[in-house]
Image 1: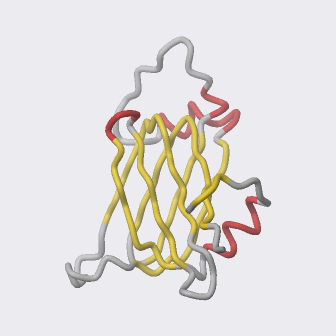
Image 2: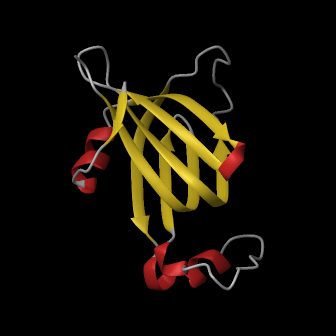
Length: 133
């Protein structure tokens, strides 16, 4: 069973560097993506769900074993774009047409580099942690 958690984001991201990415699931109903991480059998697993994605890049390693879906996590960043959102988005290779009700300062930017590269800009995210009985 997993549950949404409130946590110190900086500590969580630092700890995530010792995890492996073991699942990537697209969620088409809300333009979402779920990333599942494991720390091993001794520690509960975690997941991050991103909703209402505006930008998504996934690059897998060229020399990877297609049967191994466990990716080492190196650098991880998750932050609000805040006041520089429009500048950041305009630096990407394609234009965005923003709806009038979109709060650019509330957008989040996630970047993972390791055996795989993932970059996401989204409106919402949730972090879940496995509860062990």
